[in-house]
Image 1 (cartoon, rainbow, N blue to C red):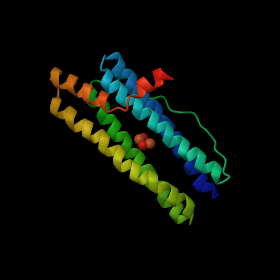
Image 2: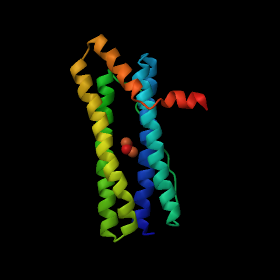
Image 3: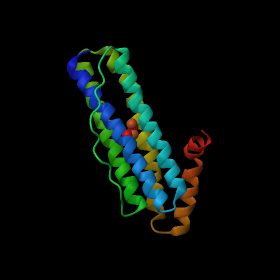
Image 4: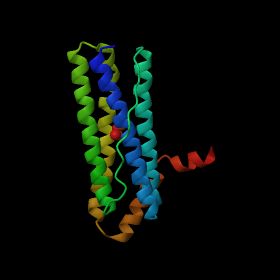
Length: 171
Ligand code: OFO
């Protein structure tokens, strides 16, 4: 594999693993706030991030490249409100999108067609990632500090979270 592309793929693994800890930290914040639906949603999202990291991990090995893991930056652990959490999440996803796009640009520049093709899945995934976070953010903006609205949204997000917590408990 091209060394520059390989280094960038390893950086992307690190970013996806950082996303895992970020969303898990957000889940822990909501757990502490007794907003269990938000927490389940964040936990499910964290698990998706680990899937993203492992997709790249496996791809590098399929190409006979070397995965090198690095230290993860500590995630943020507290926020001023549920709204602030989702603002952070959207900002994070926009950064990931920019990183994926830069990686695709690099693979294209280096004529690494296999990596460019592989990254197309991530390009599409980021459209969905930004959309789901932004949808929740828009709803939170409407709810503001209206407690009944917050609890309704908590229930809605919990039901749509894929039941990650229940799946984990069942194992
Ligand atoms: Fe891996 O997409 Fe979110 O961060």
